[in-house]
Length: 372
Image (cartoon, rainbow, N blue to C red; front, side, top):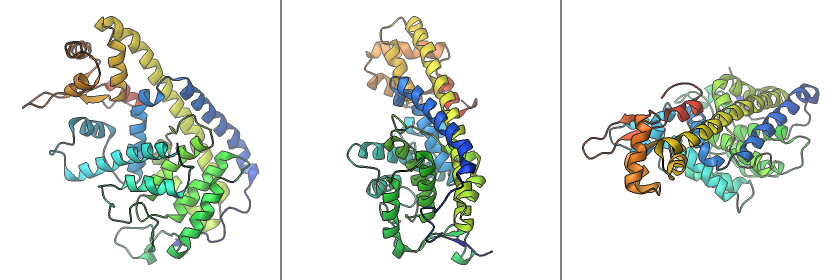
């Protein structure tokens, strides 16, 4: 079967079948608004929901083939990148950590830059720094033809061929203009923005991850979110084949409406899932805040809990040294939390290396299942 080629001249779409979209536009916007309302009401949402941020990085990277789990990522980060980690798994983990760094970097950049190609290039530079693909025009649009297909097979056997490189700069300029054009519905516009970015495939590597980073940045830019903390990769990873098929149908069949409907349904369902997880995390925090004050009988109990929520897998020495709690009190609090099984040991202290602890009930919420 011949490869599908980029839909030259069909962006932005000349028309959409709004009758097929109207039934999903309202629910998607309402679900996103409910999620954002909860986020806005959570003090220190970035701290309390940090496990969800890491899980987003894990799942977005998994769509591209990485295999590391959230637990492995957090243990690796806590232990200071141990040499005993398998090299292939270490590369996976470093890619995931770079995804999170790129998201944070782009968020900081939006304090002084609009959402634009320059900002995405800088995010791409961070994404590929020191990992696989670092030598593939990091932070720059490609100047050679790329294609999507089986690794090692010729372009003639590709599934999809993006636009030629000589049309890329002008095309991405049009894309950037559309990014800020007025629209009948912002979520429909985001669906088109995301699909077009993926269809352009402007970088030699990392296009899928940058395209998914783009989603919360757009929602934040359009003030549909108070902070760029929206996690869509769980749905897209679970429906990976539908995700790819609907993207491909845009170029093959000019089916923008089908893609937009899929994307809006993804937003609606993932917003509801994100809201449910955020509520569970907030409820957990409120319950444990009262509990830890009584259990530790310390004025530093809540500070300890806040620190643990921000770093649910950690070395004991890191907690003692950076929690701003007096050392004797910090060690005593850790002992109380372990005795009461709030914290679990995943690596015992040995050979001068401190123990690594995990706050399993928090991470199980982020995972959506019991894995810790």
